[in-house]
Image 1 (cartoon, rainbow, N blue to C red):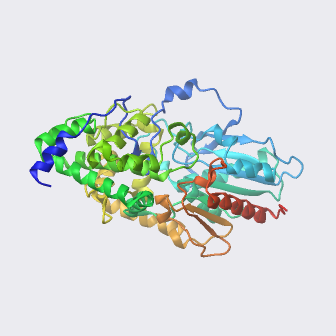
Image 2 (cartoon, rainbow, N blue to C red; image 1 turned 45 degrees about the horizontal axis):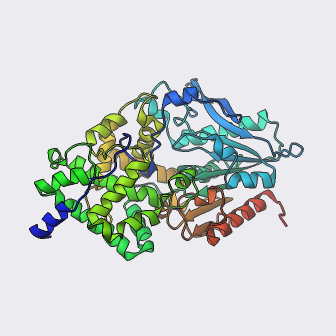
Image 3 (cartoon, rainbow, N blue to C red; image 1 turned 90 degrees about the vertical axis):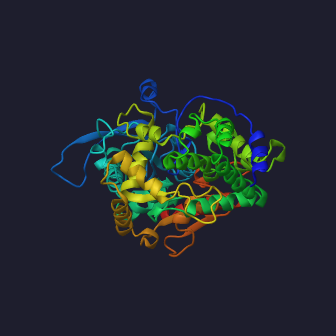
Length: 502
């Protein structure tokens, strides 16, 4: 780009809408719930489904006798109280469990069909399930998938007794995303307790550098049009050009509504990496959950179509203007007054160990699990990269060091990922009575099983659907292939339960 084009580009930028403050929209594959506050929990009325169970803090060291209270939900409204032989369990994951799942979703429809007693168990360290007094690194020692699976096994045993379930009880477990992985691993590790598992959008391959993630996001944008994909790529390139010029830096402050002047931080590679991670995350967060029937999507009605409509709208101006318009939209729906790209601010918030902190909604805990078990870092290392190359693997690895300590370095994290794959088998998992479900739009399908390799553990790959789409309430407007997938899942559950639906 020549200097004349640069000046025209700078002149054409525009200011964006301001909203209420928060520091991030999308982080490590999670759309962050910024509404979380401990105070809101305290004022919250308990759901009629809410219960508590005493759990062991450490299931694997009998000399550790510490216990804690874990939250769960139960709905027995359509349970066959005579046979008492079907139980459904929704596995909680890297966020707060909610009572809404006890009344809606595909699993509840199937629960009614099969007259199951339905449970949902909140994952340790998320939501209200606080095993320790705070989230210090030492206390997070007990946060891992192995302890979570043991929680689930102990819970199943306890519910068998508490609800006087039949000796021939068949437990079917459900999970989406990380809980989708847990569902498959629970059937693998505790087959005497779990009869079948529906594993939706579950990444089974732990991988430090998940660079394929943004390849799938690019594919999703291309499905709308090549013009949309090219506009995103050009907008990112224009942002890089503006960073090189003092006047361009000032206009980036304005066009992207930055909380801090970029000129003061343009030589800070962590700040620049965080800026481009945020810009990429605007698209990733929408792409991952595109048209999945969640309430948030119905409220804001923001989909990939929405973003691409902006990106191909030439009346807005050059591509950087359109990228800024997308950024403005995301700031608006995520209640942020400005785009806070400062790396140190993010790290300081993530280092807050209080249950009353913003990061306790799951950001600190999930980051710890990625550092110590999974990796899953969505980097800019895949080529060609439409969002530039400013957030490589080293950027994500360094966050673990800066948040949790110097021992959490690259060598530590690679070993952690390797250990996870050895423990569960990754994509070579040997298991039966598991149904793997993925959507083609969901970037996480790149780390999952999308083709049937074992007839006793079949796969359903749904073209055109996103993360966990099959789990959400059905709509008449759902794609035919999504409707067909739900029918297949129900038929699979029926076969596990030896039911004849027809």
